[in-house]
Length: 173
Image (cartoon, rainbow, N blue to C red; front, side):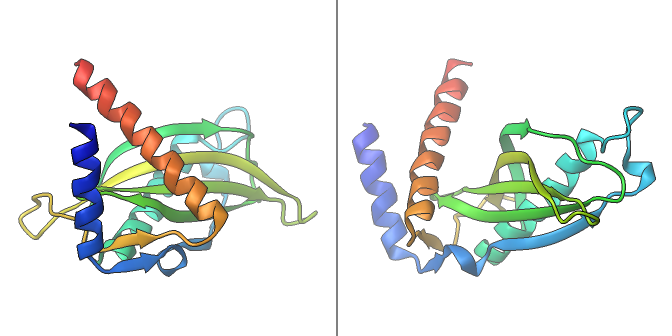
């Protein structure tokens, strides 16, 4: 059964035009951390980073699909280091994989110290989006993805593993 689903997906993907990863990627979206973004420890609220990440990832999904997309899930939102006032958050996001009716956008967030120039990787996350039509109903993704570099191909393979885990967890409920 799973083999048939994979073959159906490959067949569907070949029928759609493909986009290259850089066509919808965002490499340097910036957010200046302000005092009101800080928690009582003097570091940025995690929720602020999450909200900004979701916005950036949604833009990447919309650029790739050519239509509005909604967040379906977020996997492995990992906080790796804090960020402080007067630092700049640098967001890098791109489509990792496209399936028939959803796509995964990976995002990395860096904190850039504007005084020293130091960049620290502070967050990694994976967002799954579903394109919707004007009636807010899910529709197929218009464009497949053509990963070209070894890094893009690795992310493409790993995205499918994450999707399989999500589907297995959903089937247990």
